Amino acid sequence: MSNRNRAELLAAVTAAARRQHAAYTLFNQALADRLALHPTDLQCVSLLGLEPEPLSTGQIAKLTGLTSGSATRLVDRLERAGLVERRTDPHDRRKTLVSLSPQRGPELEAAWKAPGSAFAETLDEFTDEELAVIERYLWRTTQVGDEHAARSQMH
Image (cartoon, rainbow, N blue to C red; front, side, top):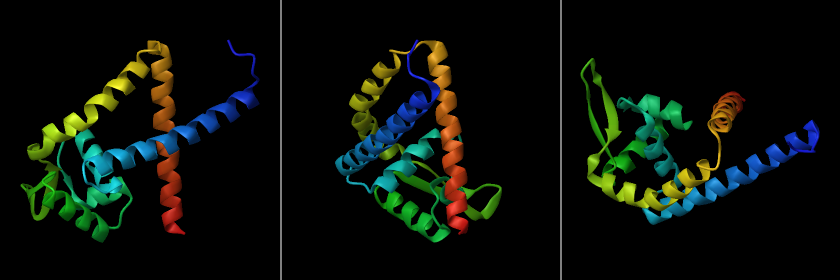
């Protein structure tokens, strides 16, 4: 158990989170550079990979915080790069759905192999209970970030 009081622990967690965010931003930029992508494009590919179903461009706009026009241009770039495919929504022929293309999948997997292994090894250091706390923290801070991003866009 730590000898630090709650205020010290809160300050330490906040500082560590800010450092982690900065380090991940630099990592994202380096990986995007390696794949000849813009960092936002890489983030969109990463988020699309988490979705069980294809998304509309409007859903991608919401997911990435982009305007609908910017999201359309993003999808255009990703399609030209062979990273996504568009197809007509079978439930609404006016809409198109976007999904990851298998074309560059092996290249993306290869780029993620070393960092993915390193992240996995880091998580091996934690107990199941600690992992549950980390997951809860990440989900909650993601929610808070989404809420504040939405408020910022309204002002």
